[in-house]
Amino acid sequence: TSTTIPADIVFIIKDKPHPTFRRDGSDIIYTAKITLKEAC
Image 1 (cartoon, helix red, strand yellow):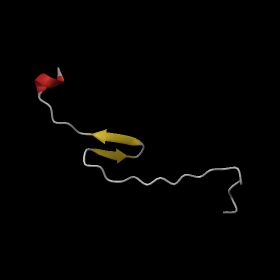
Image 2 (cartoon, helix red, strand yellow; image 1 turned 60 degrees about the vertical axis):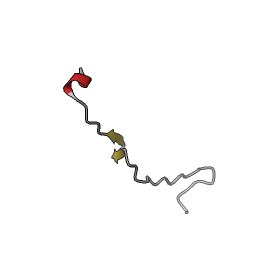
Image 3 (tube, helix red, strand yellow; image 1 turned 180 degrees about the vertical axis):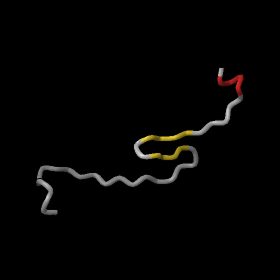
């Protein structure tokens, strides 16, 4: 486009759905069910 400088490199990245992780803005979220004993 006319707004890019010839020396720039532009990457366009699209997230794909993942069975374990999800994205919330710039964060990656993982939810695990653990017992109280495992948490201590």
